[in-house]
Image (cartoon, rainbow, N blue to C red; front, side):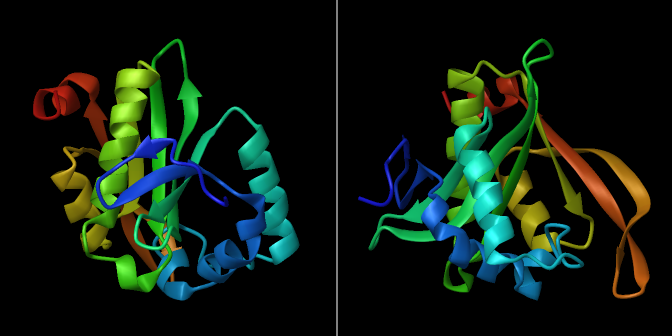
Length: 182
């Protein structure tokens, strides 16, 4: 078996990442449609570099998951809680849906809700934040649907294709999530 259902959802589940998926992650991270929105557009990612990243991600203290569609156990993206600060009980969320056929169909929102529940109920976090390009309207709508609220804006902090764009910071508190998801 390639994936393991660590956090079950309705149409997908979150599994520990698999180092053998380095090639598909490399494909996604070099795809402009993916990389431009996750701050990787200027990076060139090789299979050996991605394999090394996955080796660290699967053996370290992070909470990094493969997003796997139940239909065919197909890998469609990844989601992580990073920079966990236990004393302050906060972390940062990162996500991308690499498989184009699964974008804008609610898979990202489902994965986020699963990870928020894990972060708040299992890890005991109080606050989870994320950062997003202010022009990524699709992602912002998804984050708002999951309960995130804008908490800060950095003006002209992202440089893409010869122009500057703003970035947003968004967050959600445990009580805000748990009120809507008892």
